[in-house]
Image 1 (cartoon, rainbow, N blue to C red):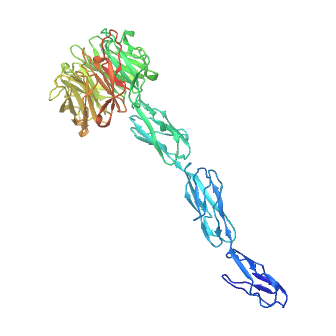
Image 2 (tube, rainbow, N blue to C red):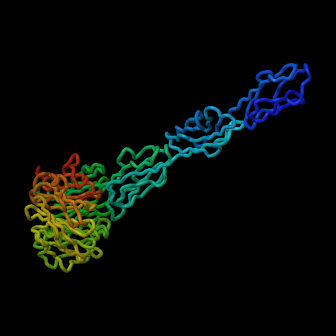
Image 3 (cartoon, rainbow, N blue to C red):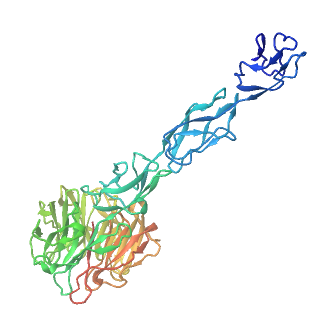
Length: 615
């Protein structure tokens, strides 16, 4: 409202360009223009810019009033901002970039009264990943005062921590993340893991193995977090780069002679869970000449608990139980928990092979007798062996069970098969609570016949077995089917190297390997048809192990660690173990440092090893 004094006012409408005060002024009086109110619906400030006072000498039309629109800023508060990089916009020329930890903001520039403002978050914090949103007062008109009630709320983003697992075949693995103090127990054979509770961006994480796989009847494994990202800081995405490698813990090897033709030795090695290389345990190899009861160790088996190593002593008609201590160290103690002697305990009864059923657990050994061998079975309790009912088990046709060098259980633990090296046959046993009963059609003379069957391995599904034949040139490995009663029929024969002996299937059932003692090589096959068919084509096969024939009747042996990533070859008379990683397509790649020495060599001649097993 414009005033020129009492009775002289004007209230121009919005947009007016002129005004006339009410009433009249006496001639020669003095007028003075003033304002009793400023525009408010659109906030403006009006001022007299000329002619605002003077004498009245006639109609006055020279008063000039100029109105300017008021301007106001927009600001507000921020809660929870901890990261850096937040940017806020209210339109062109109106921005703010609060620093980390800021609790207020003010947009640059001002808004004219009557304008509409809209505040938006145009850039989220990234140094500590957060999500900031306008939660109140984010838009509205500018009237007659600054806007100060805009509220921006920031919450810290959360991301999960996880990664991959290689080689895990057991159960009972527990991983821990320290920041969130949570654990995860991956399922059997899991290849990935994720901790369920997410971790705040900006927080550190540390992943470790809290419990290694030790559940009974599962492989005892060494699982470690192997890569640099086992610790780190959560940033802008889920962490999936932690790598947990699982492998077997140890490799044990048996050498039946120390160069003198007697006693022999045992060797123990730790397995590098990443590269698979072997490192001799302190004190290894162990001289069996320190014991009077154990002579010429041959076959080996590890207790399901991982606490004991069972040794078939071919020269002393016994199975000894050695304690596996910290770091894989062996305590050669035949009396504790017990050394079980094969009945009858005569030197002629030479045990060579061992097969362990973890479900009992039960242990079986193949024993060479003169003139006929047999299979003996034991129950296991705390490492001590006790003969099962009916043990030893002899064949209904004794001559057909001479020298069962190879033993294997089907994967359902319903059948045991004994390969008879001199009788060209397999004997099939049904298993009931560990006790063996020969099947009615056993022994099975294999057709087509084998000259000298030596070793046997089972396909993981339990449908097929694979048997090596050392008596033909070139040697062969044979695929054998199993019917519902455990009766065997040869369905395929594949040539391998000279004098094939040990045979092993990787845990996935994809590849089969045969050690050729006559030329120091390993032949590899792919397996198809659910185990029914062996196919060549593994690049590089045969692979060089010792590269020389094993002599002095000392065979070669094979084992694959529980992760299925590493294969080890006991090189018979070479006195070494060759180490391989199993790559894509079953290809074997020598591990740095291979081979490793595995025996005590008293006379300076190469001796053993002939038996090998992983834990």
